[in-house]
Image (cartoon, rainbow, N blue to C red):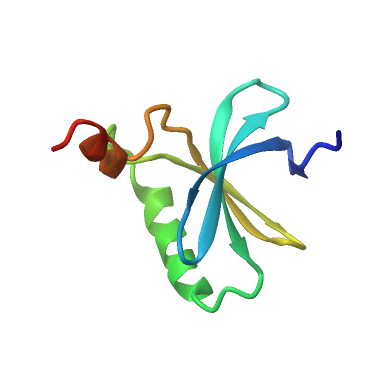
Length: 99
């Protein structure tokens, strides 16, 4: 089985999908840490909005906001490396607990 690699990361299962990106769980091969990688296709027309989001995330440091860990600009698109939230998004938790 071929590994799907992005930089120093091995991509795993899709854990989320939106209108402009797909989110994979990934494994950092050197440290063994799990992260989330949000992949934006090269043809994404909203790249300016994505870059604005990255600029904002890179400046934030709060325990209730997912941490931006970096970005990899490759031939397949822009891959944004984020902190992996083991229990999923806040919206998912609201659904699970019927809030």
